[in-house]
Length: 114
Image 1 (cartoon, one colour):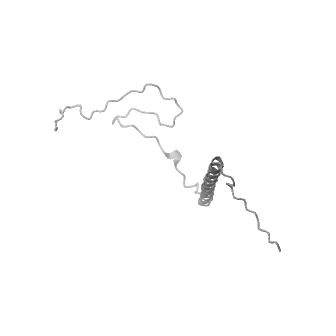
Image 2 (image 1 turned 30 degrees about the horizontal axis):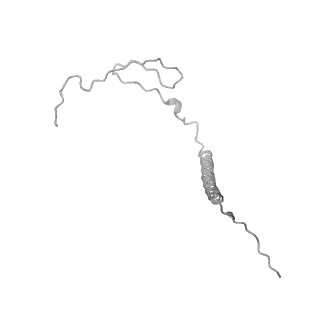
Image 3 (image 1 turned 30 degrees about the vertical axis):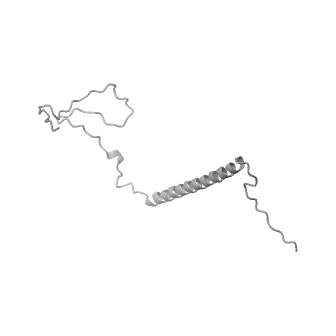
């Protein structure tokens, strides 16, 4: 099934499509400008650069990273605790609904008679 495709001059031609709606005006994209080469221009990224006069505060960044790590650890541990509690409650509920008695163990201290 090797069929040859017809070769034409329009192979690889890109058809520009016009927008249906005008831009809303609340986006951060630069305005399109007609270019002689046909390529879109990209806006300047100077507003995202840090200047030489504004030193980065690595100590503050490391403290924030440590706090974020502790919050993540807390969330994982509380999730594990919650899952184990739900599993224990499901076991207890299955035991009670099956009609058995004494499903939950009660720890009673043993007293010596003497």
